[in-house]
Length: 325
Image (cartoon, rainbow, N blue to C red; front, side, top):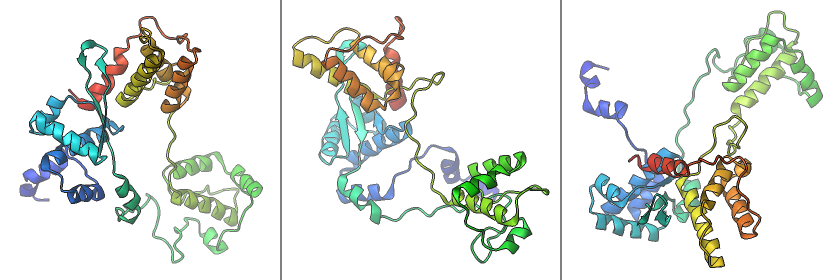
């Protein structure tokens, strides 16, 4: 690239400055609805914040949204009403601010995808996958398989089919160095490894190892499950939307009993779900278990909950991370 191109402000904007990514099917669907420009601004504003947080939720005061989108607060309010009718946004009212009971807390906004677009996603074209050539591999052979570094394997032809017990016996005969290279190749999704000069495996057995690597390289990565709390691991934090659901659940239970919520009960539930006995369950299930125990009168304060545990730590972090204000 020339010096003039390197100093081009367009290049600087693309390479160094922050930018947003809008899915093309969703952007086209929004255009087809004929939304006002103000409503589009508000929607993509919360889309960017939700994508940045990883929870698709954000908690930003209305005046901040109006300022960042260069709109009037009344225009933002009308945009919220229109987006809610189209099921593009969902806003949860958290009630009063626990830190300031005389002030209404900021609503939690969740961006959503319309149902008709979800049903049509299968017909939308996908991005072209990036083909990366693993380091140390050569060009594929005419059969489409990576060329083996061992000529003896090519002479043996197609690897034989090994049963489970036979496959275990083959991998048990790998040397320590070969096992280490196999683990590195499988973690980096490479289809070849280098065998020892005095390897105890024959050509057919080496072909079986390479075919196993090739299958692992072609396999799609499995989506990771929600991490569970383990001793020594950093405690999880409830999102702003989860905190709102806990508050609403406690208010509903208190209203059914015609009594005021017990002081500190909200903090006990949050601590138990984040770090206590309910941390081993997924967040929605943990919250439901806590509310059921409270409803049936079986709830007790977490034993490991420190007496000086500050609930504001659980409330402040999602708000600051979502709105960055």
